Length: 580
Image 1 (tube, rainbow, N blue to C red):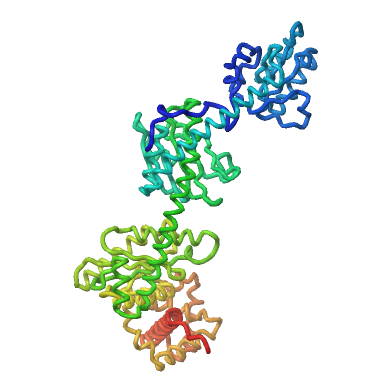
Image 2 (image 1 turned 45 degrees about the vertical axis):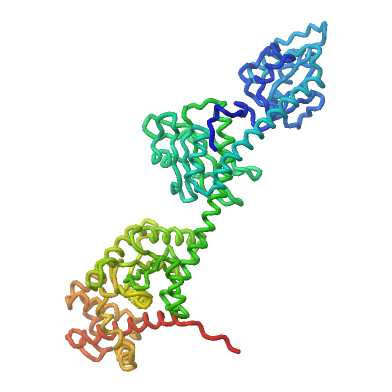
């Protein structure tokens, strides 16, 4: 169970890993009272001790205490140069041993050590290199074992929570119990997964904390180093004139970012001892949270694949028999006797271009799935579109069902537009009963989507909004209608590169208003007259007459409907059998 840090042994306040602060070493009887300069550097970490003779000019002395005779620091000029050189290579401390009877003056070395902020210790004669190095090694080993033991306790505590399977919010509460910090957990997209407040005092607003988080820095100090996630300390401005101190730890699994763990310190600046403990909790917590995120992602992926397969089978009517339909419907909560409206979502952001299209598709699919928790909603990405099957609750009245489907389409468009862009389109078919109604509704929604892209339809429209095309659907499939459309439009498309077709369409769309059509096309009135005359000669009839305009309008609609239904039939046709 989670426990308060007051009841556990905690790691040292400073010193990373197996390093011990110089301040801690000075508490040992052999080194007590030996500090003569550099008190500002007592928090430097020491992990090892080397004699001066083994520190070449290229040696990196980070975390190393240098043991040297006082005679090496005797000449004032040489003492300052020696101290500066050792500090330049990040020496943690200088341990000057004075033999019995030696009267070397260390004043110059002490001034250089004070200026550089590196502790200078004057050791007694009995503190030879062998004795001091053994002492430093023992303390460093004890420090490493100390931190390892604490980390094991933290890991065991959080692993117990993970093993019981209550999810990420329970992990956040367990981390609060260990650290007494407020905890925020976000996924890779910045969505909040959990927030748990400390019981010890007022907690900051989670929205303010989340808004103040810096952008993830995969190569910064809070990145993954040596295969381990490291916590980065930062200050977050949560309100004007108010800030909190936080530890931000990336949640990374297999080199892939899954999110971030944020621990808000109760004090700003935090106590160094508490901060060292919280680093251990954060790094172990991020590892286990990553495992839980990976498990949940795998579960969601399996659910989405199963749901996607079921949705694809529904919209294409691919069930072997009613028994298969009933078994799979029960698993997905699909009422075979219910009424459903099928919506199709299309946008350029859903096209398989670039590296982020799959993430955008998955996010948009989940958004549509959770848009309305009431009733049954099934979503799946089919091709470069998202299909949403929504159960309608308007009874058996067709008008009310269509009104409900239209309202849901508007909500769907408002929710997905910020994610998918302004070219987003949502179309829907007429609601129908059961699996057969879903298949028919999907065909109508796809047909409406194709027509919407070829016409100036609204971003949200239904099959009923394109009633003209719906009325012509059966007629357009006949050979006579296709021949009529081709014979009418071909002369215009051959003449002048095909721009006469758009000119005639603009003229008809503006109800024969020559000036309005010219303004719409950005064309001079006289040029418009000339183009209309050419169109009339190509059609062999006066385009200004109502009969000619109707013939052109009808031919254009039949041609558009034929094009859309042809491509849709090819897409939805079953695959051809492989040759034997």
